[in-house]
Amino acid sequence: DTGVSQDPRHKITKRGQNVTFRCDPISEHNRLYWYRQTLGQGPEFLTYFQNEAQLEKSRLLSDRFSAERPKGSFSTLEIQRTEQGDSAMYLCASSVMGLNQETQYFGPGTRLLVL
Amino acid sequence: GENVEQHPSTLSVQEGDSAVIKCTYSDSASNYFPWYKQELGKGPQLIIDIRSNVGEKKDQRIAVTLNKTAKHFSLHITETQPEDSAVYFCAAPSTKGGKLIFGQGTELSVKP
Image 1 (tube, rainbow over the protein chains, first blue to last red):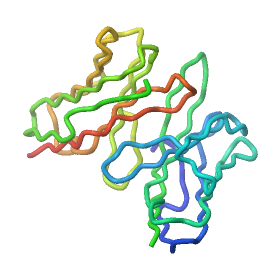
Image 2 (image 1 turned 180 degrees about the vertical axis):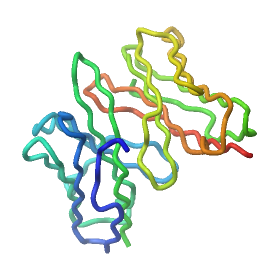
Image 3 (image 1 turned 90 degrees about the horizontal axis):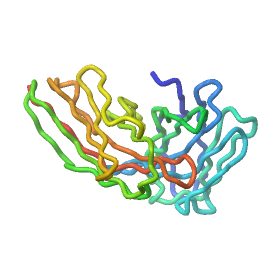
Image 4 (image 1 turned 60 degrees about the vertical axis):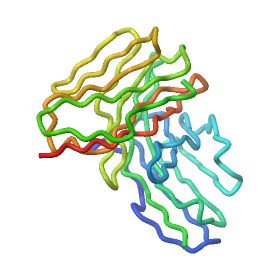
């Protein structure tokens, strides 16, 4: 158990609906990452935070996606007007950045199915 | 590095045999190389990592080797067991921030 938790673990929604996922990182980890993983592929980076600041967003992150980490602890990822192509596993990882070194630990993921 | 290539995509071995998975990366500035194991329906689990100041690291039946000149690193699993069956991913950090660039994954099957 890495200590990163995600909720919900599974989500089924209809096309056009909005969904929100939550990630709770390991305590005192200052960096939090979101990745997306489709079947048979490795995780692909979406965005990351250092404390409450969102430092980078992938071009994969369309304007329908938004992420927040308001107090530098948990984070939420919202997808508006979901499309079938959004079906994937959404993974969260956290790390502590120190001495220019970090190790990312992943949560169990949220599997999204858009019908 | 910005590009990570991993092979083979599938690997089947008999219990007790060794398994080797190889990755190459493109960015010579990369200095950290983790390996993750992912079981069906679960998130990736870090199993071993290596930093560029060493050429090899071992943890019980698992070892990782790094060749910075050739820009490749490998995962070695000895005395494989059925519970080693999973998908394994290599990764390297992007030089633009802390995100990881993952390989395509290797599905390892250990037959009893």
